[in-house]
Image (cartoon, rainbow, N blue to C red; front, side, top):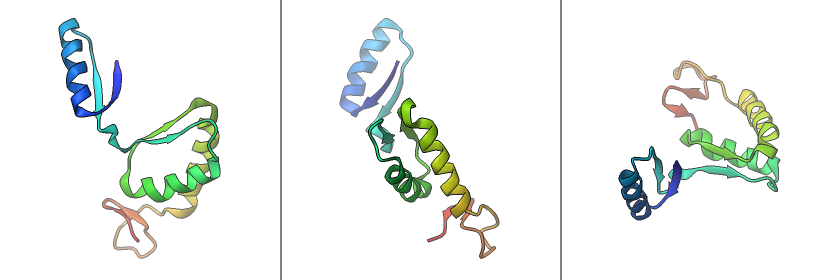
Amino acid sequence: MKFAGSTRTGKIIAEQCGLAMKKTCFELGSNDAFIVLNDANIDVAVEAAFVSRMLNSKRFIIQSKVYEEFRGKLLNKIKQKIVIGDPMDPKTTMGPLGIKP
């Protein structure tokens, strides 16, 4: 079972799962998921994902209908905009500590 929600609700579910010896996985407080639904404007979602998530390295939740389009466009943007390498090299935009402003 997988669950995303509040700590209070998580405690209730954990108690019930423990009584039934069920395997569980909790992401309490929603863990800042980036969610893209089927009716999303993919270009707008990709831009928001690039700007917000490349700084935070969080997870994405993408509905299967739009997954390939979103993935392809985001990877293309990353390849165009991010240079991974030595943080002392001025050409590097992402090193081991994140993206330069």
